[in-house]
Image 1 (spheres, protein in one colour):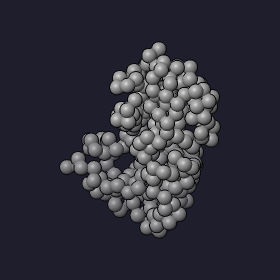
Image 2 (cartoon, protein in one colour):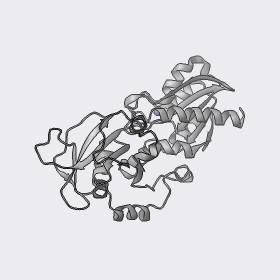
Image 3 (cartoon, helix red, strand yellow):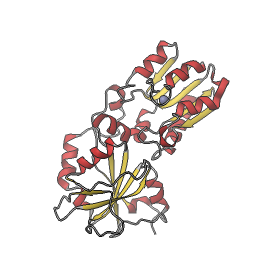
Length: 305
Ligand SMILES: [Zn+2]
C-alpha cells in the first residue's frame, strides 16, 4: 500500500465522516473505508442516531473480501460493549490485516487507547495520525462534550434583524446541516409567545432574557426549560449533558452582543489559547483546549442574494 493510496483512502473516509455531521449525536461522525490496494471493498459512515458505527457498516459491505485488507477510519475504533458490540472485535473477526487511524485517541474513557491496543494485541498492524488534523475538524464538538462536558458552539451573525427561519438559502441550509442542534436567539417577548422558546438565556447586557428556539434538533425536541440559564457556558454544559456535540446559535447583529460579550470572547481566548484545530493536541494527549465562540457571518457563506 503506497502513501498516496493511504492518503486517498483516508480522504474518502474523512469525506464520509463529514457527510454524517449533524446526524450522529451523541456519537461522533466517523467515516470508514476498507480497501485492498486501490480497490475499495466496503465503506460507510456512522448512521443517523449514532449506530451502527462506521466500521460495522463498512465491514458488512465488504463481507468476506475484508480478509487481509486495510481498514481506514477517522477515529480510534471502539473497544467497549455499548449498545452495539465493539468495533475492535468485529475488525479482528473479519481478518483485516492493517488498520490506519486518523485520530488515534478516542476521548471516551471507555475507549481512550484501548481500541488501538486491542487491535495490536490481535496481531493487526495499526498506524495512526494520517490526516489527523482534518479528522479533528469534524470531531471537535464530540471531543468538547466528552472532555469538557460542554457542547461546542458556533455563533452565526445574520445580516437581517430577525434570524431567517426558512431554508431558502442553500448556503445556510448546508451550514445548519453540520450541527446536531441549531438555535435561533431573539429577545424574549414574554409568556404569550406563539412559539415558546426551548431555552431562556440571561442577556449579557442584562436587558431581559433571550429566547432560544430550536430550528433543527437531531436528538428530538425534548422538553423546554422554563428556568433562565445565567451564562452561555451553563447552557452549553446542559446541551452537552443531554448529548449534543455541535451547536449552531444564530442571531441578528443586534442580538448577538447580548449573547457573547467581548469580555467572554476574550476570556475564552485567554483560558484556552490552544488552537481548536491543533493537529498535535488530540494525538498525544486528551483534549483540553476549546474555542468557545466561533463567529461566522452569513455574508461569508456566499449564496445570499
Ligand atoms: Zn465502534
